[in-house]
Image (cartoon, rainbow, N blue to C red):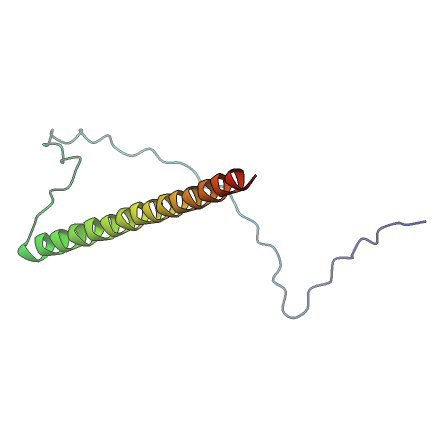
Amino acid sequence: MLRPKIPTMPTPTGHVTPPTVMEPTAVVPCAQTPPPAATTPAPSRPVVQLTPGTVLALVGGGTAVVLVVGAVLVSMLLAVAVTGASVAVVAVVLRSLLASETKRR
Protein backbone atom coordinates (compact mmCIF):
# COMPACT_ATOMS: atom_id res chain seq x y z
CA MET A 1 0.00 0.00 0.00
CA LEU A 2 2.62 2.54 1.07
CA ARG A 3 5.81 1.83 -0.80
CA PRO A 4 8.60 4.38 -0.97
CA LYS A 5 9.62 5.59 -4.38
CA ILE A 6 13.34 5.20 -4.95
CA PRO A 7 14.66 8.01 -7.11
CA THR A 8 16.44 7.01 -10.29
CA MET A 9 19.96 8.18 -10.94
CA PRO A 10 19.88 10.95 -13.52
CA THR A 11 21.99 10.43 -16.61
CA PRO A 12 24.96 12.76 -16.96
CA THR A 13 24.65 15.56 -19.44
CA GLY A 14 27.39 17.37 -21.30
CA HIS A 15 30.90 16.09 -22.09
CA VAL A 16 31.70 12.77 -20.45
CA THR A 17 35.31 11.53 -20.41
CA PRO A 18 35.88 7.80 -20.79
CA PRO A 19 37.64 6.05 -17.91
CA THR A 20 41.42 5.83 -18.28
CA VAL A 21 43.39 2.64 -17.85
CA MET A 22 46.39 2.82 -15.51
CA GLU A 23 49.28 0.52 -16.32
CA PRO A 24 51.58 -0.69 -13.55
CA THR A 25 55.14 0.57 -13.58
CA ALA A 26 58.28 -1.25 -12.55
CA VAL A 27 59.87 -0.44 -9.20
CA VAL A 28 63.58 0.32 -9.47
CA PRO A 29 65.53 0.24 -6.18
CA CYS A 30 67.85 3.18 -5.66
CA ALA A 31 71.27 3.25 -4.03
CA GLN A 32 71.27 3.32 -0.24
CA THR A 33 72.30 6.64 1.24
CA PRO A 34 73.97 6.81 4.66
CA PRO A 35 71.83 8.24 7.47
CA PRO A 36 72.42 11.93 8.17
CA ALA A 37 74.66 12.95 11.06
CA ALA A 38 73.01 13.46 14.45
CA THR A 39 71.77 16.98 14.88
CA THR A 40 70.66 18.79 17.99
CA PRO A 41 66.95 18.25 18.63
CA ALA A 42 64.67 21.21 18.16
CA PRO A 43 63.09 22.57 21.35
CA SER A 44 59.65 21.12 21.93
CA ARG A 45 58.18 24.47 22.99
CA PRO A 46 58.67 27.76 21.23
CA VAL A 47 60.31 30.51 23.23
CA VAL A 48 57.88 33.26 24.23
CA GLN A 49 59.32 36.75 23.92
CA LEU A 50 57.66 39.45 25.95
CA THR A 51 57.81 42.90 24.48
CA PRO A 52 56.64 46.04 26.30
CA GLY A 53 53.48 46.04 24.21
CA THR A 54 52.55 42.47 25.15
CA VAL A 55 53.30 43.12 28.82
CA LEU A 56 51.06 46.18 28.73
CA ALA A 57 48.31 44.15 27.03
CA LEU A 58 48.59 41.38 29.63
CA VAL A 59 48.44 43.85 32.51
CA GLY A 60 45.45 45.63 30.95
CA GLY A 61 43.63 42.35 30.34
CA GLY A 62 44.31 41.12 33.87
CA THR A 63 43.07 44.39 35.33
CA ALA A 64 39.89 44.19 33.26
CA VAL A 65 39.24 40.61 34.41
CA VAL A 66 39.76 41.55 38.07
CA LEU A 67 37.42 44.54 37.76
CA VAL A 68 34.68 42.52 36.07
CA VAL A 69 34.88 39.65 38.56
CA GLY A 70 34.91 42.14 41.44
CA ALA A 71 31.84 43.95 40.10
CA VAL A 72 29.97 40.66 39.74
CA LEU A 73 30.86 39.55 43.27
CA VAL A 74 29.91 42.92 44.80
CA SER A 75 26.57 42.91 42.98
CA MET A 76 25.84 39.38 44.21
CA LEU A 77 26.71 40.41 47.77
CA LEU A 78 24.47 43.46 47.46
CA ALA A 79 21.60 41.29 46.19
CA VAL A 80 21.99 38.95 49.18
CA ALA A 81 22.09 41.93 51.59
CA VAL A 82 18.96 43.50 50.10
CA THR A 83 17.12 40.16 50.22
CA GLY A 84 18.13 39.63 53.85
CA ALA A 85 17.02 43.12 54.84
CA SER A 86 13.64 42.72 53.14
CA VAL A 87 13.08 39.33 54.82
CA ALA A 88 13.93 40.93 58.17
CA VAL A 89 11.44 43.75 57.60
CA VAL A 90 8.72 41.25 56.64
CA ALA A 91 9.46 39.21 59.77
CA VAL A 92 9.17 42.30 62.01
CA VAL A 93 5.87 43.31 60.37
CA LEU A 94 4.42 39.80 60.72
CA ARG A 95 5.52 39.62 64.35
CA SER A 96 3.90 42.97 65.03
CA LEU A 97 0.65 41.91 63.37
CA LEU A 98 0.50 38.61 65.23
CA ALA A 99 1.31 40.27 68.56
CA SER A 100 -1.36 42.94 68.12
CA GLU A 101 -3.93 40.31 67.16
CA THR A 102 -3.35 38.28 70.32
CA LYS A 103 -3.65 41.44 72.49
CA ARG A 104 -7.09 42.30 71.03
CA ARG A 105 -8.62 38.99 72.11
